[in-house]
Amino acid sequence: MERLRRGIATPVAVLACAVLVMIPQVLSVRYIVGSGMGGWNTNVNYTIWAQDKHFYNGDWLFFVYDRNQMNVLEVNKTDYENCISDHPLHNWTTGAGRDVVPLNVTRQYYFLSGKGFCFSGMKVAVLVENPPPPPAASPVKDGAPTLNLEGHIVIPAVFAIAAVWNSFFRFW
Ligand SMILES: *[C@@H]1O[C@H](CO)[C@@H](O)[C@H](O)[C@H]1NC(C)=O
Ligand SMILES: *[C@@H]1O[C@H](CO)[C@@H](O)[C@H](O)[C@H]1NC(C)=O
Ligand SMILES: *[C@@H]1O[C@H](CO)[C@@H](O)[C@H](O)[C@H]1NC(C)=O
Ligand SMILES: *[C@@H]1O[C@H](CO)[C@@H](O)[C@H](O)[C@H]1NC(C)=O
Image 1 (tube, rainbow, N blue to C red):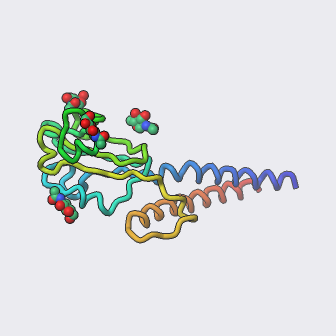
Image 2: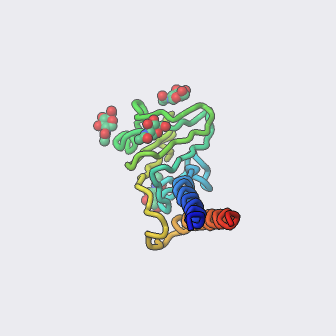
Image 3: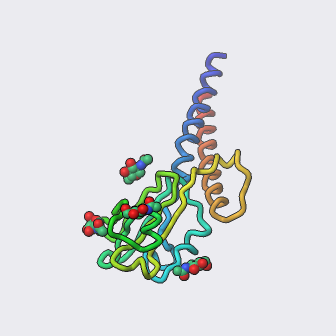
């Protein structure tokens, strides 16, 4: 009886840890800004790019652009609206033309390119929200991104259960 209980407890603990560790990693999404529309560039409507997306705390923005011309500056709302780049809240430009921005606070973020490009539309605003509750507890919403994320969660979880199941049977 003692042997039996220990044999079950171990795989259950492993499963619990696997699920806890997996969910935050799976939920983080790295968005290429302007993906499929020209990246971080002029003549891209970033309102349209962002409108079908949900940005969650822990996601990332990836700006890919011509490093010799543009840059990535985080500004406040007023400066975003008026394309003022003189006193950014944060300069995310590294010089490689590939800048990663962690969206790690739930708030509105505003980005623009200095050097005059903001006036040609190089500005993007994203609202960062708290991640939704785990899929089992949340009703299925319409819209492809949510379904997509849930698909990613379900599949590794099934593999994890299968792996634990295997180790469970090896105990006997
Ligand atoms: C971007 O698209 C939105 C929605 O169609 C529109 O309201 C807005 O005027 C456009 N912005 C620019 C700069 O063209
Ligand atoms: C943005 O920053 C500018 C300059 O520091 C300031 O004048 C303005 O009031 C700020 N706007 C907001 C909404 O914080
Ligand atoms: C932003 O940082 C980069 C890299 O350090 C630097 O070359 C650039 O001059 C800075 N731009 C602004 C507007 O502060
Ligand atoms: C968010 O990320 C930035 C850049 O890595 C870091 O400086 C900041 O401390 C982070 N904020 C929180 C609340 O984790």
